[in-house]
Image (tube, rainbow, N blue to C red):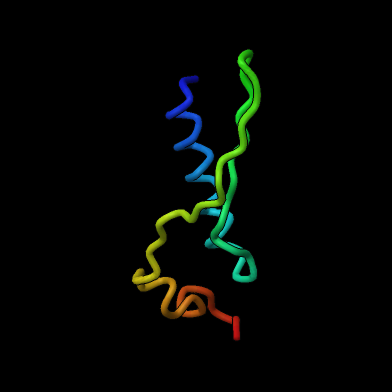
Length: 66
């Protein structure tokens, strides 16, 4: 898998984890290991969007919740 494709897949998974855990922080570092050596990125945030209707009232679609 090419590096850019793997990074995009990992960032999508991290974004889902961030949306599901309200106590997490939207800041990540990526480590890369190749035959040439290792590198660790500077911390960075992923773009997020909180304007979706499901985020405004999450209990609306789940009867019996608070």
